[in-house]
Length: 410
Ligand code: GLA
Image 1 (cartoon, rainbow, N blue to C red):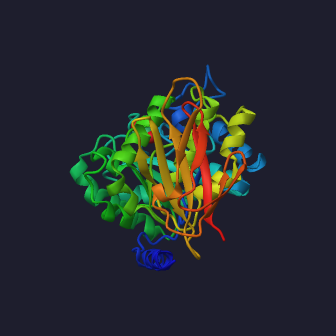
Image 2: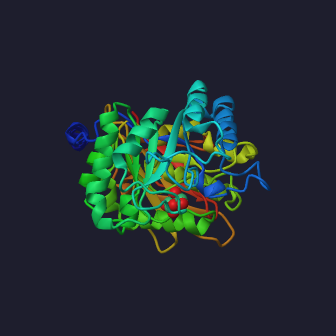
Image 3: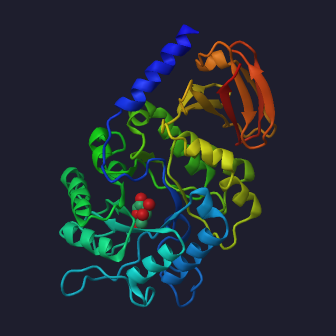
């Protein structure tokens, strides 16, 4: 019992001693919403493909879906424009403006529309000379661009890092944060800096001072390989990454691709569960106008979202990586009395049948001697009460996940 008390005391101290950083009060839990890039890319062909091209129409339609189909109420409230929204040139005063054919009413009008739906609007800039898609970059215009987007009523900025020297990022991203602060408008700042600086070769304590979230690693693509590649990287580098995540500043493994073309139902559940365990931003990149009921139910699962949005803000860790290709990840959750946990059993096997996996909570270094009540987050199944020695067996589908919630009981 004394061990449990010590654990609770240590967790309490950690909670309140973790440095408070970027002072815009945003992203106290991992931000949620929708982001255009993975699904809609740089499709600028509004002549032949008007329904899918990057245009104000697309964003208004997604805003309608977020607002009317129940997403907003669950926390998915940021609607984010990515690359390819701009005109190819700045205007005569050096100001950015949107492509006039695809955004005939301009970004301010779009922001007004999005706000009228109770949502927030995010936009994309690039720190370098050009965006990754070849549109104007911000390196010589940081202050001007900060003022422009604030004037439009933008609520989030993803600042990419194509066509820039990594060495310039250590002044560039902090400068952009300063200029945005000066506008007086709170703008959630997502920085792509570490993704360009080799992932772990950055000083994350500096990043946490200036950014609300940061893309650490490779772009996600529409494949299970891509999802697992990113999960592996986060597991392999967790000793660097996990300690720097917390309220106001998050590692970002990139968008949720649930609802797109490639992931199976099990793989979709696995991505959602893992992003929740990783305390990752939940930005869906999918077509909300035609999303399947299965994908919707995964993305809207309130219990998974509750784990994602846990107020303690601890990023989960891979605690077991077995030769049997089963991984166990745990995330410590709310610490009002004693920690409870999210536990993800991730099956990396593709051999065709569900895999039975057995462990004890003691194997996971849980400490409350009286034990935990254990339930399945996706099915609601109550496993019952487990002290630290009782064997717990889960059946995990190929390329799938079992996500459990365990809380101290008795
Ligand atoms: C980079 C980013 C992506 C996306 C594209 C846009 O690759 O990592 O998320 O923003 O640029 O061109």
